[in-house]
Image (cartoon, rainbow, N blue to C red; front, side, top):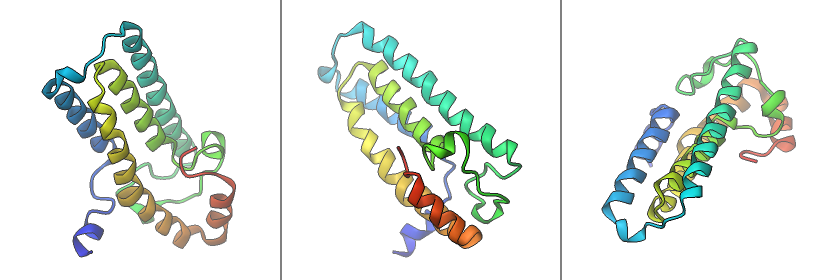
Amino acid sequence: MRVMSSLESKIPPPAVVLLTALLMWVASRAVPQLGFDVPALKWFGIALGVAGFVLGATGVVSFRRAKTTVNPIKLHSSSSLVARGVYAISRNPMYLGGLIMLIGSALFLLNALPFALLPAYVLYINRFQIVPEERALTSLFGDNYIAYQTRVRRWL
């Protein structure tokens, strides 16, 4: 259990997205037999990747406007609870944006195997990023954060 908790909030989430994308690429090359040829999906994958990036960037902009930290590694340095804009729809639009980018990457690769890595991303982010953040935000903002959790879903 100690090893698991020592991994909490240690790896920057953008690095997790990049590592997952790299593993997806390696997986698609390792098992080309699982490839499929639907060129339109490549373009749809690009569009999803851009949409995911924009969603994540919108979350960053919301934090900057609220003059609070974007750094998820320093959990207790948040100065305000952001609950407007994209944060009224998802408590974690930056992580959701990462997931959408990864779905776009999987489509772009035109191979079934990369899709198997998507649940690993969600499970990792939930366990090692979101849960520790929720603990810290509850500690910092108390009932305001708890009320926010009841109004807005974790992902969508």
